[in-house]
Amino acid sequence: MSLRFAALNGLLFAKTESFLAPHPNVFYGQYPIKKQKKSSWLDAAMQGINKLSSTVFKPQGKTHKVMLNRVHASHKIIETLSDAVLDKFIIDIKCQLHRKGLKDELVCRAFAIIKEVAKRELNMSHYDSQLTGGWIMMQGKIAEMQTGEGKTLTATLPVGCGAMASMPVHVVTVNDYLVERDAELMRPVYERLGLTVGCVIDGMSDEERQQAYRCDITYCTSQQVTFDYLRDRLTLKKFTTELDLKISSLYQTSPVQDKLLLRGLSFVVVDEIDSVFIDEARTPLILSSKSENNQQEELHREAIWLARQLDNTIYYLIESRSKQVTLTEHGENYLKELTANMQGLWSGERRSKILVQQALSALHCYEKDVNYIVEEGQIQIIDENTGRSMPDRSWEAGLHQMIEEKEGCEQTGQNQTIARISYQKFFSRYLKLSGMTGTALEVSGELWRTYGLSTCQVPTHKPLQR
Image (cartoon, rainbow, N blue to C red; front, side, top):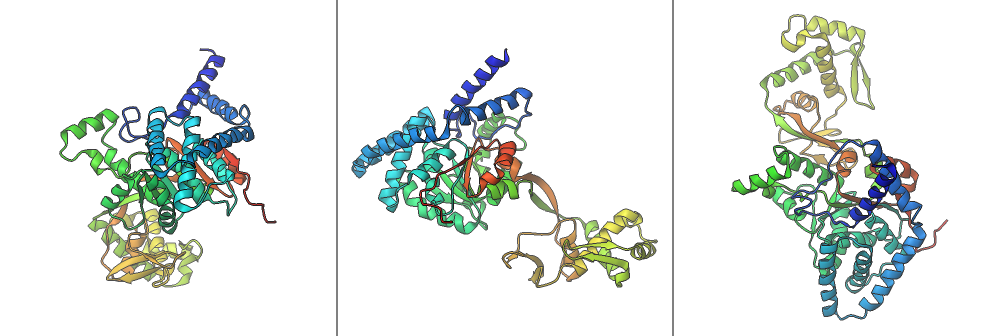
């Protein structure tokens, strides 16, 4: 196969693939997700060609103008319809999107319908800048929109269109307050389109989460959806293929699908995308479980006892900012004396030093009612940003258990990592990925290199205030 033919074939496939609306079905499977594979030189070449095809061969201004003309032409007809006839139009566009996919003419018609529904239900009409932003996201790109341009309303376009095409859509925003607020603000639009809306926030039960993810549109934070995906991954771990998953469902009284929280990773729209994709991209999210180990408990108890013997600052140095303690030469020598007749891990010099330094941190770097509280015999971490306690969080590497020992609490099991993933790897597994922000152009190069996401600046509706 010649490179020229391969390039042409790749472009044709990319064009066809762009129409598809990935959702749970025979083609995508019961849990749609982008397969991870190693990129070859040809894949890299195709990525470059596809990027060129969307920026060089199709000038953005011209493409957006064609889209706007189509939307306005459709809207002129739709705005004259009665409510009953509009409802029939909605049913028709949903059927066509489901059968034919996200073809440009269908997306434009869907945008016109969503624009009219927002006008009737919320008395809010999408401006051209918002239609442009929605179109950019529908193409799997990042829309850079200035503050005050109405990003919440803009999101209804790709979100509503994607959901009408049968894709389970996740709308990711920065905190639980905005999750609930945005979902409730836009609920009348989605429900008029015949779509269900759910929210996932901290403190929800598995049943509540599952019900929310079963909706056509689910609002959530990046942290909530990532942890729920990790939990699903543990459930799916024993099934190596989609066929294994289907066969198991035939023979189990409670099918595996009933235990899963998500319905796969089909389409996500991320608000303030740069803060998640760049600022927190490599931060690992860790799913852990408690382990019961009597030997570990005794080890933590002995570490605190030894740390209390090192009761002079000539033995250690404290780094306040990082909350770490380092033994001085005097401290190391004294620790050798203290552990000379001790057995087990204490016979190893390096391990002894690490454990005691952690215990010294527990004693001197973490303060009651500042870094944690003691509530009913349990240590609860205080969030430095909000000042609220977090009963479901714990420190790692035995630190939490050493603080429990310090405060005379019963030691809980130490956390063991059972699954972990970064935001960068997680969001790369969505089959269709897009978002919006006010500052993406500053990091557009990194967003392209890491995620293959192009960034487009949306012309403002309101004049900029300088």
